[in-house]
Length: 169
Image 1 (tube, helix red, strand yellow):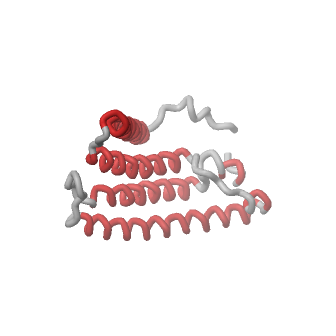
Image 2 (image 1 turned 135 degrees about the vertical axis):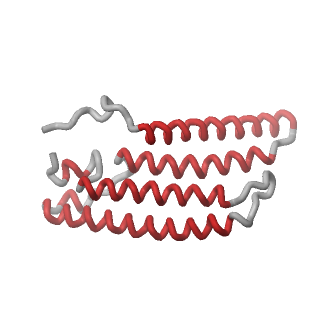
C-alpha cells in the first residue's frame, strides 16, 4: 500500500518554525552582505558588525537546515553497497549506520557542550556577544540529529529512502 503524497500532508509545527527561522536567517544574511557590498564599493567603508552578524546567522542556518533535511530524509544518500546486497544485510547495515550516527551525535553533543561552556567566558570582537551563541548551533544540531536518528530507528527506515530498500510498506 502506497503512503500519501508527503507534500499533501501538513508539516509539523516544529518543522515549519525551523523553516521560518531559516528564512529569517537567510534574509538577514542577504541584507547584511548587500549593505556591506554597497558601502564598500559606493562609499569605501563597511559595517564590521554586519560581518559578525552574517557569520553567526550562517552557522545557525546550516545547523537548522541540516536538521530539517535529516527530518525530511533529503540528505545525500550513498547506496553503492546497500543496493547490491540482500534485504537482511541491508537491514543490518541500516542499524549499523544509525548506531554510528547516534555515536557521532553523542560525541558532537559532548564536544559542543564543552564549547558552549568555554564560550560563555569569551566574547566576539565587535559586537561582544558570548561565543557560546555560535557554539550552541552545533549543540542544537547534535540534539536535533539525535532525535531524527532515534525516530528513524523506531520506524526502521529513513523516510523517502530506506522504506523501499528495506521492503517496508
